[in-house]
Length: 460
Ligand code: ARG
Image 1 (cartoon, rainbow, N blue to C red):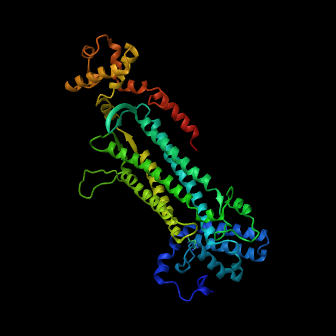
Image 2 (cartoon, rainbow, N blue to C red; image 1 turned 60 degrees about the vertical axis):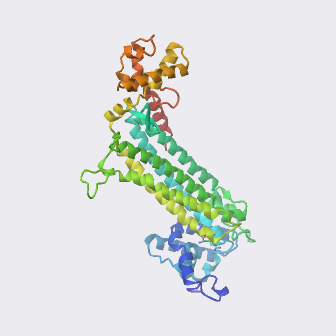
Image 3 (cartoon, rainbow, N blue to C red; image 1 turned 120 degrees about the horizontal axis):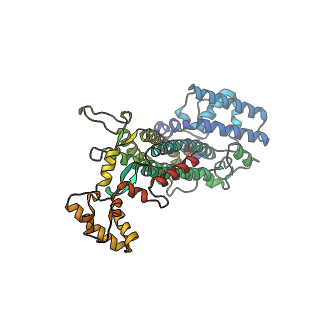
């Protein structure tokens, strides 16, 4: 058997050289070695407990597997392309270390249930890493927001000045997005929490195995209930890639905002030099490359999700080699998102509000026109539509006379509504406008401060 494939007895010819290269996934799925060995150890313990294999063989297998893990940990293990994947590489190595006893390991299992088990275990730990990384970004948003509850900037719709908001309120909108992202990853963790091991090739097994024991020992809630679904299910990979894609999309939007706000035209924020790069020819330049990478990386996440969905489309029941590419897609999606999260956390810490420019721009574009209309509704018994029309005329006047709304005097305002006193002038103050937004979820300092308190309590 040495140096031969597991199935060599059945085959007249060797596998094509080119297919061996293309079909081998070891260079990718070696990332599953810890999960593969952990699952094999538990499987062996179960086989021993059920007296399906002798403890003598079982103990040899477990010791051998531990040795292999130590070798891989230290980088002393030679992965062989001809053994296709991580599962067969480890089984082959086990034969080399412990001899014929290794032959008992693959009792009552198949690579089909083995690979899904390993993959689920990997996605579990990867999701937990991502959840922590998302929390770091969220905490940095809170820190930056705390310093900017009073920083007025123009809130934009259609990239046109709309209404005054605080920079803190803007930043915390991303906190909410990331909070939902975490729930998406958590939902997947709940859904995938069933152990496929013991489903074997597709139909289950005639050995008296204890799947509940295996499931519990591997940290799953329970075993899966249908052996065919168990081995052909890749929903958990798709859900992971989907959660990653949305999260990357959110951060791509943040990055794009920052790029726009940092542009010379807007000049609302600046970054520490550590988050900028220079130009090879233009000496004056400071470019926001990390933000641009965050904006772009989402392309990888969408691509991997799309590829995974396409592989699964129309795939008949049950296992097919098509699915082997699932690991590479998930690993790439994970790596891309991890980089995005690392850069986002740093970028948020490195951002500074250019408060004077923010305040100046918040006053441009008649951002308090709605406040004037609201004032008329509240104080003059007009309907909102009537007030809206009066305020629109005032804006036309200000535009024609090249004045900001806050620069108009009472006499000018009275041309559009007679019965007014100087208390109206306050509505054109952008800070006042911001602080009037006391409705739940609004941008007033008082609201944002109490949201920050809540966020600090809930964030783990
Ligand atoms: N490397 C394979 C994969 O990831 C393992 C499953 C192989 N099963 C099989 N019947 N060829 O898909």
